[in-house]
Image (cartoon, rainbow, N blue to C red; front, side, top):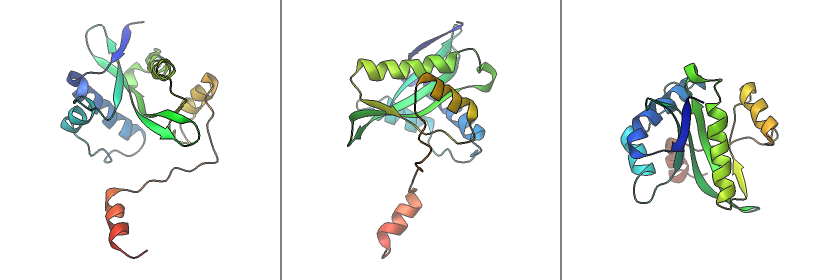
Length: 161
């Protein structure tokens, strides 16, 4: 292994942001990223962080991958984790960094008493789906993801529905 996995820190925010942008391009949403490096620092590395990260780091200090996750609550299961993004830069895929990042999140969940880890995966990302299913995860194909963006939130709140 030519990399190690460690907890992310404030100094990693630019590299994490770069990976988020690369992921958006991979997911065919190149203009979707609105957060900034400063947002990541404030939201993830302040006194009350909203998320946690693990990074895959090469021996020269280059960040080649990251997993970003946060706590949520399941009314059926209790304390849970949402794995928001797991990303390895394209040139470093296939060396095991993604698997080790994934394993780090799962170990964190197990060590800290979480009842479940959940995430979304695009239906066309068959490599990821196959990996997740092989790892023991159940991909729920009968659930759709619903989202409300800021513009539609305001519209809904201010109009009669």
